[in-house]
Length: 221
Ligand SMILES: NC(=O)c1ccc[n+]([C@@H]2O[C@H](COP(=O)([O-])OP(=O)(O)OC[C@H]3O[C@@H](n4cnc5c(N)ncnc54)[C@H](OP(=O)(O)O)[C@@H]3O)[C@@H](O)[C@H]2O)c1
Image (cartoon, rainbow, N blue to C red):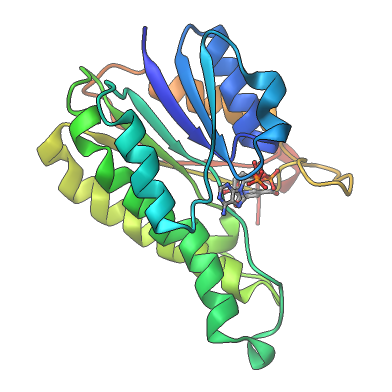
């Protein structure tokens, strides 16, 4: 049985990914800050674990608990911005939060689990970035900058991680319909989960470098 870690599993893309991987026969370790919102995901195949991806000591404790597994798939999905504001009002503290969620936390998690992934015949790390990292928006500076930073992290890892036999993929979506406010012309969480499952199941020599996905109506930006 293959094993996957999925961050940001309490809702949205992460929750849909846990379900699709479970149905595909994976053992899944589902991670987010809110254990109550993941309770219904828990099963023989799904472990739930409370982790704040910006708490680097907690990431180390998480690794210590699971370090002996053979890890086939790490989905660095948890992400988001800190308080949205124009750069004129931005603070270093607020900016750093976005970087910790989208760049530093995922970097540390990926780095720690390298030995566990090296036990797998086809280990894959998938990062969920955003089109906002390519096309920033007014008031979304901390998020857009962090997502662009995440892209540079991924590109660097894609050069360095073949040395460990690990594939590194960026999935870069446009708008996804996961927020409270209903969005027209948006991808669904299930669309994203299906793309994650597909990338993860490709043969060990096939590395999807970037996958940019948007709703048909938004495919020209
Ligand atoms: N929604 C969009 O339109 C859109 C577009 C492009 C890219 N994306 C990217 O796609 C990914 C998934 O987005 P989504 O829309 O599914 O997000 P979402 O519905 O807002 O869910 C975010 C998930 O991440 C978790 N999370 C947030 N901060 C965390 C932290 N510090 N530590 C651990 N978990 C944390 C949340 O759980 P807890 O609150 O329980 O911790 C939640 O499970 C993100 O990387 C996002 O940036 C989203």
